[in-house]
Image: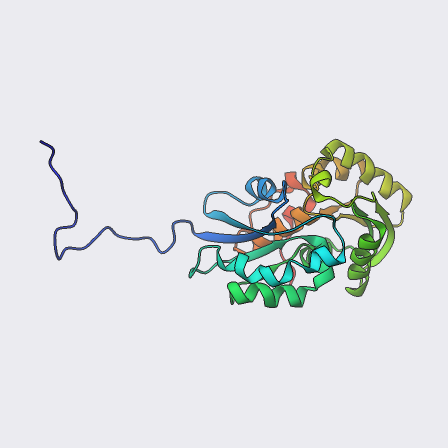
Length: 262
């Protein structure tokens, strides 16, 4: 006959509990159609002492102003289901075009409904911080979007005081197709975009769906200039907010930078 035990005995103390199972916690709200952000964060953010906890928000293609704005009412619920009742060191809403169209302040308010008091990272705002950390003011922009959506992204950076010297877009509307562009193809487009805008000090590649972060080292080697992508910027920003300052320049020049003071 088996022996059964319940520890501790009645009135005794249970096992000692750590304050957190993982020391640092990053929340991630991704689109239901996203193939890329979670693998990128697993590669660039997750490490001993830093965990990433994700939830998804409904999204329906094609990418346009209406479909992007339709996510806003659901952001609070999506954020609130990430470790309910527990705090995070940072939370990222992983959609560049939506954060531009909805607006950073409006995204922050929506996320705060579900996760109050947590620092918010959006791709566009993180990219601006990254470009400032790199000391660049004139940028070329490459996007997979239609020209209409791409112009919104360019205007965002211009409103932040950056000089957009050139805008290149691929005219795509479906983020699932954007995720299928191979990194070596992204390198080719990026090198061509930088060649067309020789006065640019850096390149920003927009879209969390694109596998552009993996292409950054090759683009920087080919162009000799820093490259910031949506997922590279958010990964870097979330790490720095989580007090993880370890430089990883092999992922791109940005990953060796400290977070600038706003």
